[in-house]
Image 1: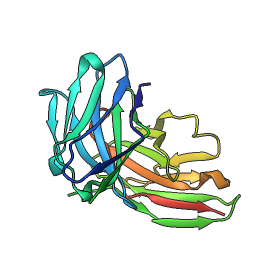
Image 2: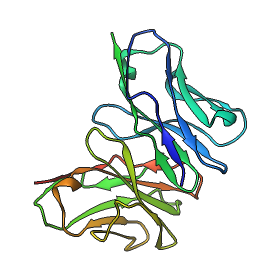
Image 3: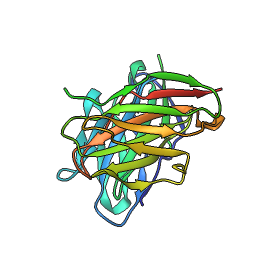
Length: 110
Length: 113
């Protein structure tokens, strides 16, 4: 089965700063890629997904992610974060099955 | 929009007791999953289920765990004899097919005391 790694455990930013959260995976076959967000006390919600086509994927709330196949990466970006983006972000890779990264906690200071 | 529903939202149980967590997947979905998230940790895969049998399970999913689709709509996770370390949020999920988007329920929070 595939494995997923998220580089940053906890990221602290000020409002309006730009965000990039790293996600790398290891798997030899075709994958589908996802970013989920979990706001404090809530369940997982889908932010965006990549199945095929344009490797730059736009999601909800101004997030986007770029699939770079040669680097086995699917980094999440947002040009200007808001306080309400404070949450845990999980990268997930669907190869044989669905595997999640350890998560990155994002804290946005007002 | 259709969604995965789970009950109960929170259950407190004594160590050694049996617990059944219930899920109603999205109606036209064929693949069902259970994940768990221990507080402060990552989401961990437990088991996937297709065509009335387990298709894959993790090392966490030992003999204390079982899954069942007792009828056309429910998908249950049973923990036979709960341990303290089973305290976690358990997420049910479903997808239309393998490789499709997996949709998660809101989770069932299990506290073992």
